[in-house]
Image (cartoon, rainbow, N blue to C red; front, top):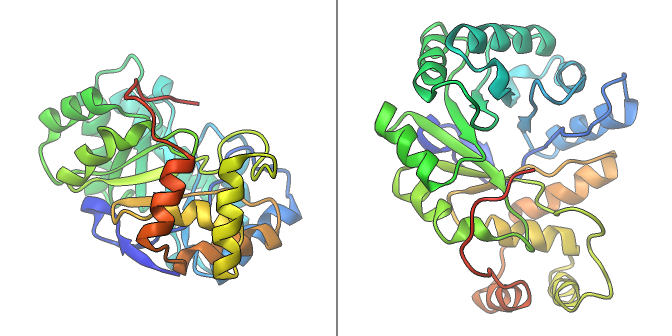
Length: 278
């Protein structure tokens, strides 16, 4: 599994990680097996959030005995993101995850609390050793500019955003901004919504042809395309150990310039627009 520096956090983090949104938290043996299989294959970046129901306790079970191998990320809800509320929310997440620290802690999206208060709480948590870095999620360029004006360079570790082949809006401005300021980009929902791959799609036929040339799968090709830039990571979810293994296979897949050009044409970036959020 290829790794790269995670923005200002500086840690070497697996390019392909593991998401947990909509992952059943009721002692789901398949989900736990998927996370553990992913860890075995080098997908040591695990992303979760307080919003994800029982996902945090599930992650705790999956990483038991392996915490030091994991780059663990969770997120605070905007409704909890006051200065005191952020600290309390983090402590609840730590308890559910059965760990003494998070490798990175994110504001899930902007809410009504001033960013100054949330970021002050992040810094307090970092100084206490309860988080090692912090970042944001679903921030567009205007939000990022405001955040940077508050905390300065070198504080924001990442921006986690929607990014998949049919939603490439962040390539216009968000990715260039993050690259200019040393902020990692983390792609959530990298397969999009609905059926993927779709054999009837012309674009998916291109993925299938490229996959065959590499002895890979279309999903692996899609992830390799999304993470082709040195600033980008992806956190697909896996519902089974086999699915996790498929995701992990993208970690060392390298596409040629011609293959990247073919995918770019098959899934055009489109016009600039406001950052989508799900």
